[in-house]
Structures are given as C-alpha cells and as structure tokens.
Length: 169
Image (cartoon, rainbow, N blue to C red; front, side, top):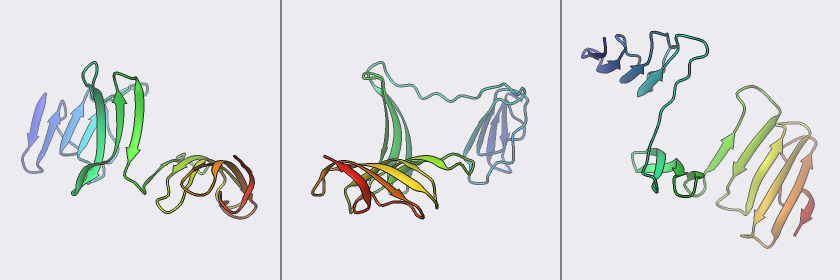
C-alpha cells in the first residue's frame, strides 16, 4: 500500500491504507491518535516510542523557508520564517496581533510577547495567572516614555503602564 486513494472519503495515504486526513503520509506501521476532522495533513512515524517525525521546508542557499498561517483574505497573516542568508528565525504576525508561548500544563510560569495596537507596552516575561503576579515590560517609545518597567500585583495580572513598581529610562 505505498499509495492508497480512498475515493469515498476523498483521502490519500502514502504508506497508509486507512488515511486519517485528506493527506496521510506514514513512515512506518505505527498508530496515530484520533485525528481532528479539520486536520488537512498527517505525517507520522510512530511504531517505536523513540521514533521522530519531521517535515522539511527547504529554500535556496541565500533564500528563505517559510510556513504561512492565513485565512481567506490573506495567505500569510502570520508566519514562521528561516532566512538562510542571515541564519535568522523570524516569527511574524499582523499588526495588533500577539504571540503567546504557554506550557501545556497548568504551570505558573509563562513567557508572553504581546503587541498592543492602542498602547505602547510590550510584555516580555510574566509569572502567574491570578495571584501574586509579576511582569517585566519594555515601552517601545510610542508613548511618552522609553524604558524598562517592572510590575507586581497580589491579585491580578499587573499593568505595565500606571502600576509599575519601577520604571527605568
């Protein structure tokens, strides 16, 4: 079953006789969990606990490789790009958007990067979610000050503007 076409379900399997999505490429005979109905492609290698699955996007030696995230109005509202010339990784999103790096578990430590279209504060690091919270922020100069601020709140997410403990310029 090197190439399998399931015409009834409109699915294609590569080395997979029961594709779990529109396209399912399976490196080995391992199993996969239940796949969400909105998933377009699955790439699996799961027959051994230590197996790894990788997907490569390869650009020219002085070009870039990019993974786009978009909607029906814009193909690349956000993207992850690696520039082969400068060896730089870039995470980009539309103005007013934000990126959030959050652990899967209910940990009390989070790294958040936010941009605010109406303000001038960028949160760099924060800790906590509802009690004893702190944040470190960088004012990007769109307001009246430019500097680094530290904020703490005993009961809620702290403000990095008016409620800062210390503001360095």
